[in-house]
Structure formats: structure tokens, C-alpha cells
Amino acid sequence: MSLLRPLAVAFAFLTRLPVRIGEAQDTEVGHASAFFPVVGFVLGLALVAAAWLLSALPHSLAAVGVVALLAVMTGGLHLDGLADVFDGLGGGHGDRERMLAIMRDSRIGAHGALALILVVLAKTFAVSVALQRNELWAVLLFPAIARWAVVLLIVAFPYVREVGLGRTFNDQVSATEVAWATTFTAALVLWSGTRALQPTAIALGVALAFALWMRRRLGGLTGDAYGAAIELAEVAFLTVAARGG
Figure 1 (cartoon, rainbow, N blue to C red):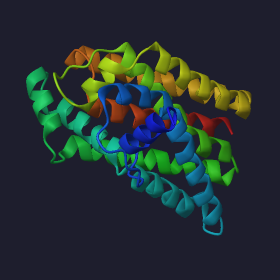
Figure 2: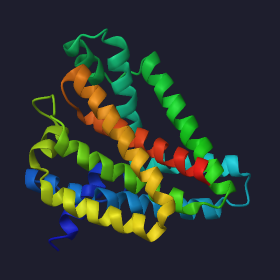
Figure 3: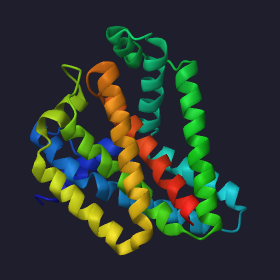
Figure 4: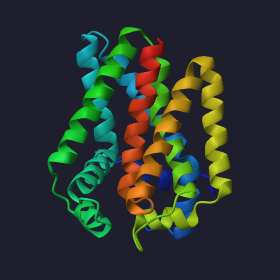
């Protein structure tokens, strides 16, 4: 039961799947980060199953279904973060407080809409190529790799807001959670063979580059930035995997 509780918390925070956890303690939130790649792996299993069910369709249409299913399962949480981040960066004109205020606004602006369109299109095209080449390992792994990368960002970069769920993660995640998340992710990569090494490295590199950019602009990360990093890492992994196929 000690492992099931943080696993359930991880599912509750990262997905919209019907997982009931009640009120999570701060320490439970921290422990949950160790299971972020596990959540991603389960999402990947669902995506592979969807790809199989949609295999009678043209690959491009099946890819639309796969990407749409991921958005439904996550409630568009990370896509929302992506839009908020780019609205803030695009509309803040270099003013840190203005950027943070815009990122809190639930309305979507032109910069956020453009970022959403580009990321969803890139993800859909890359999934389509993976399905065409029958590279289902990429569809299986990309959600896990991206969620592992964000665990590293949580511990490596400061959190800029005083309160919020992201603050709780930043305060509570320790090297222990990073080690568990990394061990599980390494096992997935080893299972897939050398073909996953480059996409994984590039996905992590993109997430780190984005975090460094955010630190330069804002002084650190926010919860929206965590979501944006996941989206960008997913696109990076799929793009490199599709190119390498």
C-alpha cells in the first residue's frame, strides 16, 4: 500500500483518469514524482492500444486519434501550460511580473494559440510517421520519457511563485524520487534497445534548454512551465524517433 498511494497521487495529478485520492499531503505529492514515468508508460500503453484499434484507418487519421486520446486522458493539462507560457513570454514584453500575470490568465492569446497549433501538428505528423513505419515503441515510450524529464527539471531549477502545486513539488521532490524515476526510465530505454537512446537524449536536451530559457526570462519555472516542458519533450522524442526510423 505504501507504493500504491504515491502512484495513485501521480495519476491524479497528471491525468484525468478516475483516480480518487482524497486530500494529498505535501510529502505524498513529492513521493508521487517518482512515478511520473510510470504514469507516462501507462498512457503509452493506451496509445498503442488505440493505434492498434485504429489501424484500419489511414496513418494520418489514426495519428489524430492517438494524439486526441492523449489530450483527453491528460485533460489537456500540459497543453494548457504550454499556451499560458507562450502567451506570457510573448505578451509580457520582458517584464517578469507582467509575464507571470499573463500566465495566470485562463484566456488564450495569439502566442499561446500558435504554440498549441504547432505542437499538436508536429506531434500528430510524428506519430503518423511512427505508425506508418510500425515503430510503436516510440508511441509507447514518448509519454514516459517526457514525464521523466520534468522530474529532473523540478529538482534542478527554482520555482518562481510563492504558492501553488508546482511549489509543493519543488519543495518536496528529493534525490530519492529522481533516482526511482530515472531507474524506471532507464529500464524502458534499455528494453527498447539503442534506437531509443538518441530520442531520449534529445528530448531531455530540449527540456533542459527550455528550462534554461525560462530561468533567464523569469528566474525559474512555474507549474505551466512544467507542462510546457512535457509537451516540448514529447515532440522532440517523437520527431527524432520518426527521423531515425
